[in-house]
Image 1 (tube, one colour):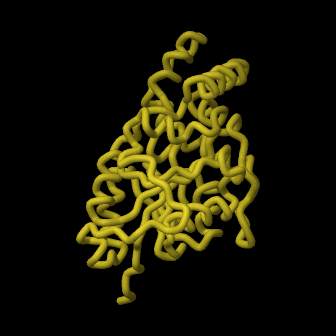
Image 2: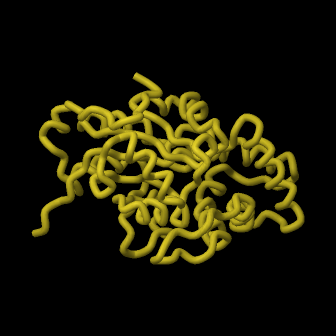
Length: 258
């Protein structure tokens, strides 16, 4: 039996991982446009949006990550999957993006995420966030009560680098002072999160709620409620970390919450 890899830290994506789309608001807004749909149906169709996003980004290459995809393709792919009329979809996407630019569309606490952060910290693991965002990732996380226990947030808008560029992951690794092979990234979009984390040499696990999105050989969990148990069985955590004695932060590390 091969030994389990060691793990010192977990870095999470924000939107789609710690905070989710406001499917409830989206369903209510579609009703105003004359298309009644349940929030649960949008949530089930979200994976089709991910696939459309990945296609818009181009094929994943072994030599490096693809460019970032098109969020309009993501939202339109979800709407197409629930049968929204073709003529209605551009207007609906415009309204969704207007909400995102105003108060935020990825703003609801992801089920199981708060408990997952607490459990990882109780295991002694370092926890941080890397997000493609518009400078408001930390604010959205705080509003959803997802900032407690997070050491820092690397927001693409503030550092000028976006996933899947491995350089944005390197910023977080430098602040943590951890090795990429001993750091896990948790994300929901293959062309952005998986491609970027792997290009940075990190461990990776995909949020794949229905088991129909990830590659057959990609590590996956159905939701954030499974993360801590998956980490506990798949990795070796040093005794000092298990005892909760986290190592000192690397150079340049900042804390966003207690």
